[in-house]
Image (cartoon, rainbow, N blue to C red; front, side):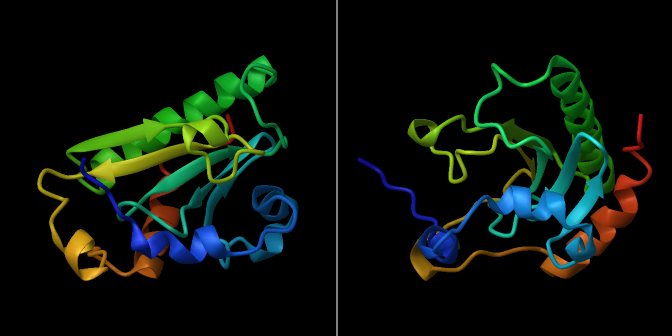
Length: 164
């Protein structure tokens, strides 16, 4: 049996959580830069994942605190899907991603770290972007500084996502 380890996520899984981190971000626009929010509107927001699997890993999160998509407002679902589509286009063009992983982990049983608030993961991928160093050296290699990626995506997203 093979095992996959992600030691860089240790801080995330061991932090004590009080309340919903996504609701906290949704409620307070004054900390958008500190929370790495790239975009927000009256339905959702786009944020960089603080514990990314790849450089440029972003999430699209509804403002509504909801733990399932079955009961999500239909208009909100469609709107969020359009935002996801535009974010994928942005990562492919602006980051020259060779591909994109897109998904949701719905519920603890599906591996959701924050199961109480649904969210899309969007991860740019490049041919050959995985290697042995993560597993054997407890090290994750990113091609650019996290803050620089945030600054670039925050600028780029304005060309793709608008309040529509």
